[in-house]
Length: 304
Image (cartoon, rainbow, N blue to C red; front, top):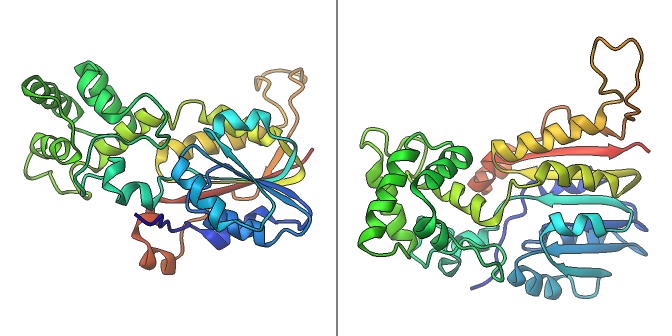
């Protein structure tokens, strides 16, 4: 299957990075190479570090970025950030690639039948099949509610456990059917496909998408040169909240209690938030790619 991916808010992200031809930049979520290629095209003596935990993305990236000065790294960006050299810009697109969603073999989609997988990194041990068939009922309900904000999390978890006692749940279509039947008919198709929130929640659990995100944003800020830019695209509220809170913390110049007569915290203002409110996709982009409708772009610039 061809690796197709729409690069969300491409021009906005590239403009936000404020690329210098001799700079060093890191695209920590390579995906379909769309953002990376636009960065690489603007470099003369500079360098791009391209990171992804999906080997399919890295293999395609090596082809699409042939001839450019690019270092490829197979890893989760959270593990790579502390090892980065000082760079002039960092980009993170935290969404799932269209290729991953549309490829039934990857097991992300409730619309396409395939083996339950949902791993962005195919070398990782935990799959959606493990979560659905091995987690306790309470754990499943908690994941669906916390990561998917699913109102019927308890009922869905109850039915998952009931069904897996008959036989293991191994396909996306069977899981989607169980979820759909767990939601009252009048509520079933409000807000899109009934399995959308649950599939999102299980995917987040499988890939550890929210674990350590706040700390990773602060770590990324630390790896920026003065004047360097951090651009992060998120796709759901929990991600955006972590990114916003980390950037706002880095922007503070004091964290002492309000009643303190003098500052003793030694906190310094590390960044300026370029986006006080997140940048959203344009109407033109939304018309072209409906999947970008929940995207938000936040940008911060390193001051020290």
